[in-house]
Image (cartoon, rainbow, N blue to C red):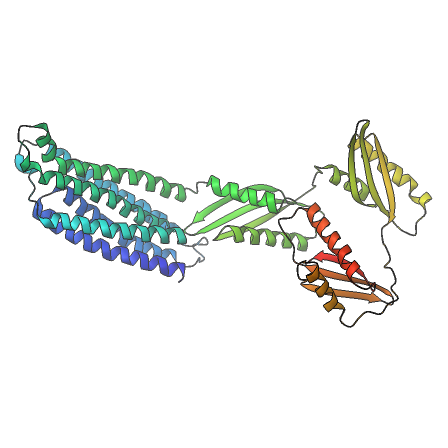
Length: 464
């Protein structure tokens, strides 16, 4: 069932039950003269008006965004929740005024209640209905992120407490005739119904403070610290290469609109940067339901914040590749060792000066005692294989992977040029593994797989 349909059905059921309970409480309250039941009837009448407003609000909120309302119509639910708070405040004010007049009055008839079994029956029915209705509304409000339904659920939660207070009040009033009139207990029991109505008013006021502050905060776009921390943590853990520079968001109904500024290397092509932005938007949408994210890309020069990045930046400045960096903390000082990738057909004499300059810069930036480099050609040729490729080559690979209890390959690709061959075995990635653990896993699988197969191609295991 669609969220909009759920909200509409929940709001409609709330209207129906509010109408039934209001009529029943009003009839019994007028018949008994109980201020507690009358206050409950008025409370339910205002709940009926609020439920009608909620039904109107959720239907209007479900309308899609248009030219005049680019963020949709969801704010109507917060406005309706605020209107319900004002109605509840009026209810509480009337109950407190009426209770005070009865407490200070010298007329004994002001405290008299004509109790009948129906007074107890209607309150018990109200309790059962409100318990079920409150649970249903709270569940759907949580599923659909509806402030209006949440306000309705809070109303009926307050009805549970207030109905319980009234039940205690009229039960105490029923015991009045069994207690001597000149005792303090008689004075308390005679006024129990009025006192219970005051408890109802206090409960209503407490609900008003909670709902009112939430509705105002939503209308004022108050930041949710928990959501902000979640987004920041998500970017730090999953998109650490692209630092989050600025973040703001607003919640409208069941939608959250997020705007963020993300730092990206100015060297990125605009198409690549756009793909990164799409990936960030998809990541946020996957972890925050109902989120629509707009990413602003801020070009910047990323300052290296680790020895690895510093060494790579120095190497790139001299048009050299670098890998397998090792920092050795020895008693004599820090020693740096790395592999430098240089053109395979160049002479050492040509690259001697850039190599020495690279070593000097690394030594200075990392405060290293010594820098050692191992030179490798930047392009390696594939080795030649004399054996023919078996027709069931892929089947052999998949069988060998099963024997190794390794993940089933998602793809096996073989590339050849005369006798030079390379075979890529693609397996699903393990996102929770560290980079070091991933490298170890792939390297070991490659070695073990090569040992089980005939030497017809260079085998490399990679993540899909």
